[in-house]
Structure formats: C-alpha cells, structure tokens
Length: 452
Image 1: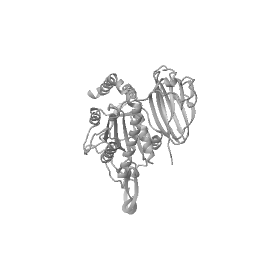
Image 2: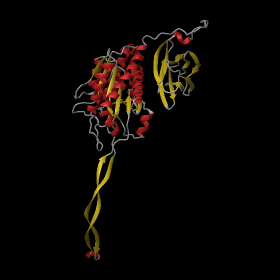
Image 3: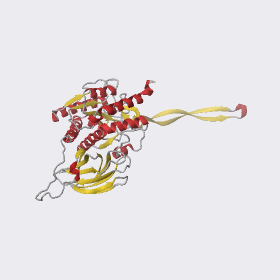
Image 4: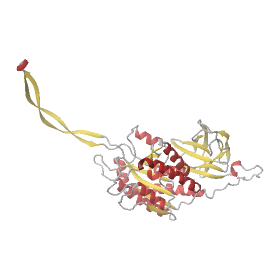
C-alpha cells in the first residue's frame, strides 16, 4: 500500500516546498557550497562493470570515486572561497535517498553527480577449432512387421565455437538534468533507435525512479522543478558539455530520459549528473581509468562551474547601463530596454563571427510579443512569437561581449513571456530558453572563441 502512495506523497512534498521557498529559489545568489557525489559504492552497489572481452574489468564505483576526489581538489584549488562537500571519500554504499539528504542538509547551491555510462552488450562467437563426432545414418530393412531400423555409425568433423561479449561502439561524455523529454541529437544518433539503451545499466544503485513524466504527477513535479531549478541546471549542464567538448572528447549534449533521476529531482538545488564515459567501450574505459583522463574531466567540470558561478553572481549586481553617446550629445531618449534590469542571462561561446538566431515561442503559443536588441541596436520591433521562426543573422565582434536582449512587450496569455532561441554557429547548434516580464529583460551574451 505504501508504494502506491509514494507519487502522491512526493507530489505533496514538492508542492509544499514550492509554496514556501519559491521566492528564495528564484533570487540570484552566491555559490557558497558545492556538493560532489561519486555514484554507487560499496560491495552492495558496484555500478556498471567492464564486461566485454579483454576489458579492464573496472568498476563504476571506483572510477566515479577517483574522478570525484580529483574534482573536489580542483574546485577547492580554483574556487577557494567555496565549501566543497563530497558525499563519500571511500568505498561505502549510500542509497540515492541518502545522497540527496546529504546535499540538502549541507544546503548546497550546486549538486554535481559523477557516473560512468554503460549499455547492453551484444554476444559474438568465433570458431576456435574442430572436433570429430560420431553420427549415425538411419536406414531400414524389410517390409511390414519385419521392417527394422538400422543405425550405421560414421565420423564427422564439426567446428568448435566460443562466445564472448562484444564492446560497445558508443562513446563520449553526456550530461543529464531533471527535464522532461530532453535528448540531444548527438546522443540520439549514437543510440541508433536502440530502445534498450539507458544509463545505469545493471546498477543496484539505480538512480532511476518510478516517476514518469507522462503521468499527471510526473508532469506536475516536472513543472515545479522547472520553475525553480531546471533553467539553472540546464545552464550549468550546457557549460559542462561545452568544456568537455573543448578537451577534444565527444560531448553528447544535455539529456534526460522519459523517467526521472532520483538524486536530481530530490536535491533542493540546481543539479546535474555527468556520465563521464562508457565503461564498456575500450577507448572510454581506458580514458576514465587513466590519471590524465580523470584530471582532464575534473578540470573541465571545474571550468564550467567557474563560468556558471561568475554568471549567476554577476546577475546580483546587474543594473541598467546608461546609453553610450560617444562624441554626440545625448539628445535622444535612452532605449526602452534600459528601463529594466536583466534577470535571466546566459553566456555562450561561438566559433564563427557570423551566427544565425531563430526564435520561437517556448512552450504554449500564447501571444507573447517581444522586441529584440543586439549591441544596443533594435533588430526586432514588437513581433509576436509563434511556432514559426523569426530569423536573424548576427555579426559577433571579437574582443568584446556581444549581448542580445529580449524585451517583453507583454506577458502573453500565460505569464511570463518566454522564447526559445536556436543559435547556429557553423556546424554547432545551441538551444537557449529565455524568460522576461514587464520588470526584467533576458539576455544572451556571445563570446567569440579564439581558435588560434
């Protein structure tokens, strides 16, 4: 009976949490405490294991602990003013519920969960020799009741086979957040339609929960979490994906499955889960077991956290800036967007100085009307957002921060005013969701990456 009540109890708790803490959760804040979780642990829960032929037979619990400890050290070294709390520093078992409880009790501002991916292995076979077997040829003699069966032996040569598990061809690092129906194109491509593919295969400490986003409870809880933490989790996850890509590794984007992930939905803070590599892929298994690979991942994640921290904390002090007049007299009124603060701001790095921006209404089509400014210039004047794209081509100036500002002309039928920006940068594609209202603008800041 209790099991049937769990979704209702979780829904009640989530609604209760939202009612009393939503105002605090939406306020930009200092990043003071970061919780780092090494997935799995102890003899009860080794997690995924290297099982293909000639694998290192590594255990996920050992890989995650090694990377997590390096990440803790790197965060302490590069962000000395922040308290870094590991959920475990030795090979012990902790349930997902306990991990989330530790994070919440320490009042973490970020939750970083380290895992290693896996997947179902196909079986192969090969001939290893031959053997001689005795077979029998059947014939009959006589007729009627006198008919007799005669077995004549003869020798035959048949092949001898051995069976083995084939390694995964999938490889790369992916980042996961609590967000319904989000799967990157890169990860979708390597899945090749394999419905059996999922993270955390064969792990006792399954971070999967029975919460299904297709149910009314799942949709409600997803909406609650989205209002409080999803955007910030997505922002951090995107930065981690970018920094992993900068190392030269295959970055598989920001993702989520049909069902929830307990340690992400139960932590009262922005939370991401990093699948550092596929433990049953030979190249990835070597990488995530190596000192070089572990350190590289720790540094990439730390760099993303630094970027995220700087961006979040900078929004605390953002105020409208005066118009730049140069040598001209400021005889014209300041742009209307300067009357509002910027509350929702994101920064992305681009590789080309020419980028395309397509923008749509995000979620329900509810008559959102926006104006768009780029580097103080009005590019879009009072356009209604729909499911069809409004397209812009922007020129990014090197050596400076280029800013696109979304100005809400109304709140639409369902406040606030929300937009989905799809940014195409050569072969790279970014999806950015912005939210503005009649007191606050939203913005995207573009930084031109130096490829030299």
